[in-house]
Length: 275
Image (cartoon, rainbow, N blue to C red; front, side, top):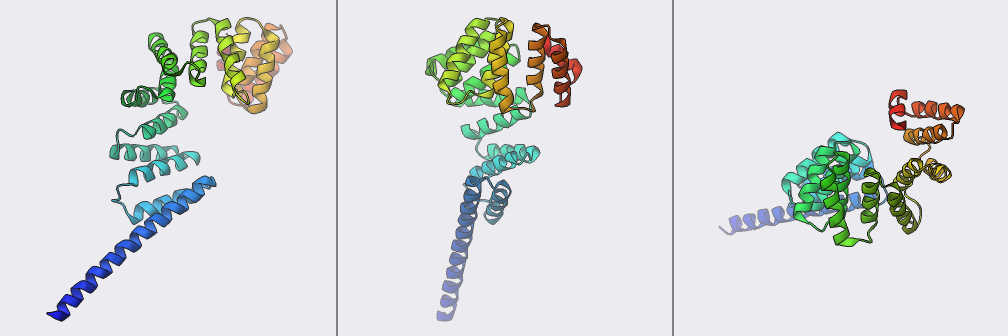
């Protein structure tokens, strides 16, 4: 009987030690993943996250790990795998606001506007004060020609924080869409003054407005700055072609249309954008 009791104690002790070792290994993999994430070594981070998940597949913390896995896969342009893992993580924690925003952001990157819109709607239902979700919800509403929804989102942004860059940019985009170009320019200029370095999209938005009100030198300056940031962005050459058209400079307009084609926009689409 005494031998049996010793054997049982030995077995329980071995199992406990094994469990501690497994937990320790799990945590060490997470630590290694974190180190590689901070160093932006996405492939290594992905490897350690997968090892941690394999080590303890039933751990309650795995929703966060799977979310991180999806994010590092996204940075590697493994969009299908990233989306699948965001879905898995959200199935485990469906009310995780950060997860919903991460998946919505990926949907935007994939140009799946309707799905991104749905995720931002879920975030707003969970947290009506989330200014980022409200901003993107409003911008997508504008893309979908839902002007009343966009106006309501801008009103909410003004209520939450009228001085936020999200609010000011949303005001500018709304005014631009409504054809109130001078008001839009005022908003974008105010936003640029707040930024240590002008944001690419803000410059593009303001350049478009400058073209509409025939402030051609101002438009040219914004396009130049944007080209320094994104020299291979085809739409910028379309904007410059439009600028040259307004200046009756056919030679430079044609050069820019050719550059737009070179970087990925068809001649037909470029001409549509120029109207």
